[in-house]
Amino acid sequence: MSEYRKPVPVPDDLSRPYWDGARQNRLMIQRCAACGTYVHYPKPRCPRCAGDVLTPTPVSGRGVVYSFTVSHYVGAPGFESEVPYVIVLVELEEQAGLRIAGNLRDCAPGDVRVGMPVEVVFEAVTPEVTLPQFRPRRTGP
Image 1: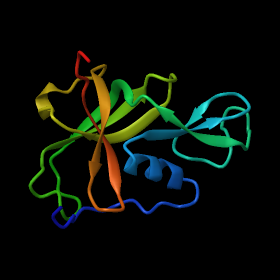
Image 2 (image 1 turned 120 degrees about the horizontal axis):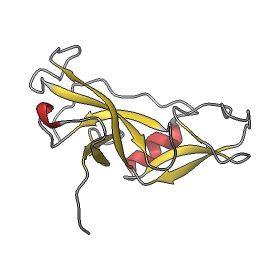
Image 3 (image 1 turned 180 degrees about the horizontal axis):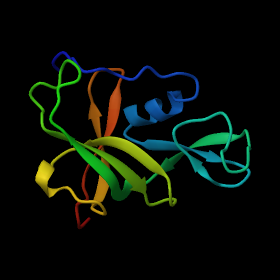
Image 4 (image 1 turned 30 degrees about the vertical axis):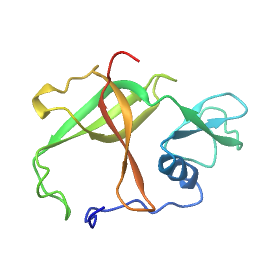
């Protein structure tokens, strides 16, 4: 693995289960024990019922592009060779309104569309950090 020059997340107590799951190639989203609502970004309480027992729960990583932008700007070191790149907001299939941001891989910027089916892929960028990203959903087994 070559030196990774882009910014990396710094987990805190709330987000650590999310990042630990990503290192294991699993997308882990908090779920409220009281009402069953999925909660992302990690929070100390459920925004629906104020429950305070939120358990990291594996989700499928499948969803659709809810929104996107194509960046032509190099805003941080490490992105110089990637512009333009696509940043997507994906609505996961587990729950309406459950959205997660990431980069879209394996898709030309002109081909992305709102409603496009996508799936999570995991990109190990350092020994400690794996980033959930997305690609167009593949069909078949």
